[in-house]
Image 1 (tube, rainbow, N blue to C red):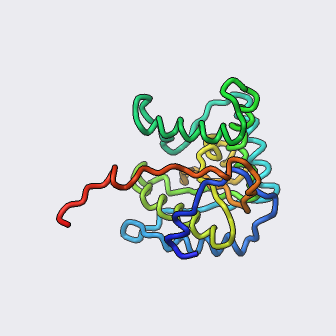
Image 2: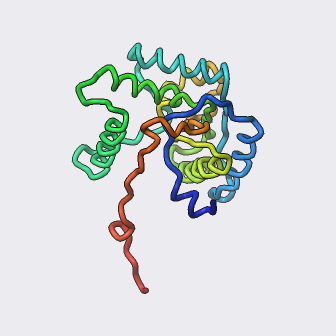
Length: 223
């Protein structure tokens, strides 16, 4: 698969096989991903890679916090969209598509709650990556660079038959991560990535995300 095919085929995976992901594969993915561009080659990224008992403890603690209605206090800016915007509508459309595939009806609170839990369990992936940056950097400063390295992680993973899902649910309770993963206070927790071998029988994995045609969001000048 060439790079253009990889970019076009990459999708968020929300259901995984339990098969473990070898450390050497994850290390190669990160080595490759860190070739991402960054402002003045500052490389403002750090990673914690979890699997096994450590990841299980994080998943369990996240779900306990969620079900206990503990306040979420993420250290990054959680994305939000105005209710009357096209961005909010795209979010709603995505949720409808997923719920349709998962046979979750709007009035079925039990299934909706179970789906919400999955995100806080890294969608039951066998491995997870937490992306950190230095707290001394400005809130917005490293975000473009982090986005580039995160995209590279997701694309590199596909070379090994792996799927990924970039998700903020895994970091909405930073106190869980700080305690279990021993993250120092001078590091800011940004986002998490679920990693594993896709379960293609899982209904939500058949989702094909819609994309706005380039003609609708691009101006061509001087051609």
